[in-house]
Image 1 (cartoon, rainbow, N blue to C red):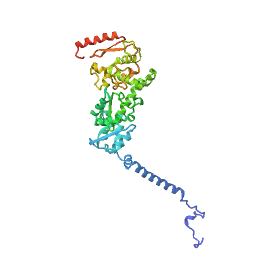
Image 2 (image 1 turned 180 degrees about the vertical axis):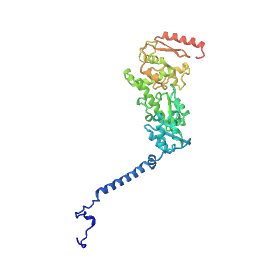
Image 3 (image 1 turned 90 degrees about the vertical axis):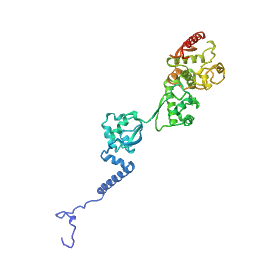
Image 4 (image 1 turned 120 degrees about the vertical axis):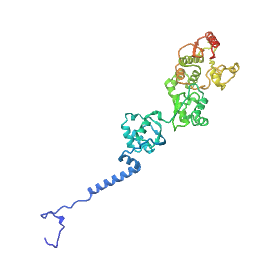
Amino acid sequence: MSDENPVEDDAYYEGGARRAKKKRGFSGCLAVLVALALIVGGFYFAVTKGVDWVADQFSSADDYPGPGSGSVTFEVAEGDATAEIGRNLKAEGVVASVQAFLDAAAAEPDSTGIQVGFYGMKKEMAADDALQVLLDPANQVKSSVTVPEGLRVEDVMTLLAEHTDWGLAKWNAALRDDAAIGLPDYAEGNPEGYLFPATYEIGPKDKPKDVLAAMVARWRQAADEAGLEEAAAEQGRTPAELMIIASLIEAEGRGDDMPKIARVIYNRLDGPGDKGGTNGLLQIDASVNYGLDQELGVALTTEQLQEDTPYNTYTRAGLPPTPIEAPGDAAIAAAANPADGEWYYYVTVDLATGETKFAETYDEFLGYKDELTQYCTTSDAC
């Protein structure tokens, strides 16, 4: 070789064989692109998920010493897993880190029993203290309202207004939206009888329409359990008529007597007119009182018994036009499943115990009335 035609040292192996040049293109670029993709993807994930999320996954389990201060109303929503609860607690400033809460939950066998609801908590709590608050349903933030059987709609509205922060006007406004609260079509927009008597829990985010919707939903449960609509079809009546009957039963009876009172009502509506001259007249004082806008149990005068209103079951045969109050489970079940019997009358002969006797004939009925009269001469209950 001459010095005039030098070759690069790396072009040849030792001994004169030509060396192949290294290929620097594809494999090297691919590794760089993958690395870039991971960096960009990590940046995007951190932006979309939040830097705090990334920090939570890789940082130590910071924890507040507690006991905390201030107040936080914290919500555990339906379907929230432990990790989601931890993230929400950290976001609300209750715990210092998600991991501290997860560690506390891992050490507590009952941690899977956290119930859905709102809880009163503090800022900067120790994670274990926060967990213990969530494990006790007594710490849920809610108010309870008990609506007893037999109330009219106006009484229910007054009761709800007295036990909540919403005034009567707000409750009445919500009541007018019958579609929002879920009234059945056959109620024809009238909620009387469909605001079911029960105890209701009202959470911090609930509104009047939510509570009323819960009451109607609870009525629907009772109606379905009693087979109300199926029973109405079997009897050739409408579900609305059975709800009217249920309200009359609620006003007139109690306990085991309810199915018998239901049978008396059906017998009077459907039976022949030779049973003491009933002729389809129900003769139920509670209905008359409703038509006169008087309280249940107010004694009626002879003049009031003759005052003609759509609810006067002494002057008008058949059912009143609407329910007269809110029936409970037992009254709805009795309307759908009346007892078997030929009774046309009943008399409560002991007002203290509620003992009621049932009669098939008018003469038998008069005998029970005499028994009641005798009872009243010796009792202050009359």
